[in-house]
Image (cartoon, rainbow, N blue to C red; front, side):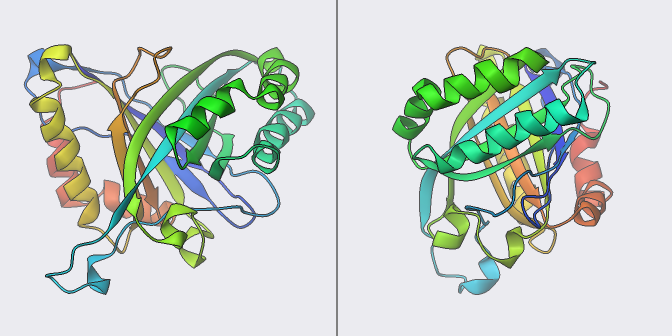
Length: 272
């Protein structure tokens, strides 16, 4: 079975940046997966942006050009905050998570904030980070400063945390890798988490991921960038794959979700 979880619809502003996350999955026969979907909206925290990412635009290249790609590592963390979390405690938690990028090497992009919609897992906040290499992520997990931030500013206010890490590819361009430029001044990160049964990993799983990637690439006017990959976090067995789509705006996300192409895509999914 595969658990499909349109996980996050996070609306975020990092300086002037807004982001959101969400999930989607192509058609598989019922034996391959079960679905558990929800949506979060996240507000980007902090004063100045450090970095960003961009999807390669085919309109900038001739049909014969090959877009050069570079591997990056995406890190997702979902938090289930305690009901009694105050506004002051929330600000302290998110401020400390956000400013960690200035004290630890390897983080090239970050957005985080509060979820917008009700979701079955009751996740209240989300964090997205980008690293250049797996080694940078490994050092991040072991960094004493990060561990102190968790101990003093996060875990006291949360029931639990969910981590998903995956390797992906983006356009080999400084603006794309570091999420810089006007395209990242505002937007929505749409996150999809999926758990495939082992028997579906080689065939149906790749079909699902390829179908969604192709669908996202068909909407350059709505989508800035889309990344996806296999979860390699050994401590997290809930999901095998993740997808992050960066929409240009909340309105762009709405148009995409209401498009006939997307509706045709999800029509083949079993009921949640």
